[in-house]
Length: 365
Image 1 (cartoon, helix red, strand yellow):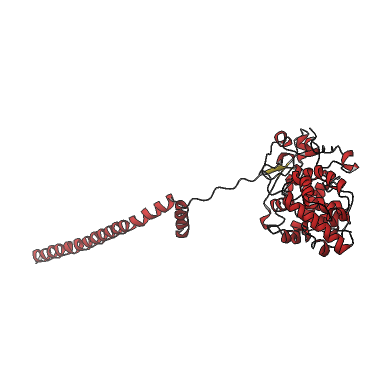
Image 2 (cartoon, helix red, strand yellow):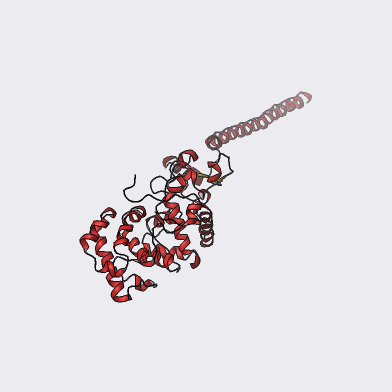
């Protein structure tokens, strides 16, 4: 009986052992599965990890930024425009001092109010530089001024001033010039260029003055422009300087400078006149014309402006187009600013008091 019981125990113990073994095997299998699953997961993660690494290298840029940078790589960005730097006062530079510098920004986005302020300030600065500015044609009365202005087309005021003394000595009144022999007048006007056309104009306007205005030069714009050879520019010269009536003289210097200063982008003289007239009170128009024209003749030349000697450099958006070195720029100055004679044989006393020199007569060495 005892043997049978122990045998049974042995048998049950033997059965229990495999059962225990089975449980541990199960554990082992599940552990293996977990390991394999973990391995698989880590295998799956590898590409994304690679992506993350590459993204990190690229600076973690979003997709849109990547596209933008790709486009930027293909298309080169334009080089930054060099901003010109102008001295606060060019006159100070000429004296050898080193003034503070002011960056000149192009006034492309300039408001109308800012434009008016800048334009008027330029005029005030030029009034200080040219307090003696005057019409640079010699004349003693309105008749002489209208004739001289007509003759000044396509030539210099100096050449006209050297020619008119002989003309007015022989034909002092409209009546005299209206009945003159054209060939004799042509011979006098030959130095002015286009002498045949100019002879026709001055004889024609003299006849019109005698026939329509009693030999007197009219003081109204609408009457002046009816005279042969007289346009708005000539009319405003006569009105402003012979009759004291405000007008803007849009000559070649005036046109060039107001566009260079970006006061207007117009190219038609009548439109320029209207645009500039809107920036200034009417009382300033005649003196403004003198200031701009004098500056254009003496400092702000067409081909090579004397930027380094310019008193309005900080206000000019075109600073740097010409010579910026003060000493080199000083050599570009003309007329009295450069130490040379002016254009009038008989200039006003204020001009002479300011150091201006009268021009020599025709034929003088």
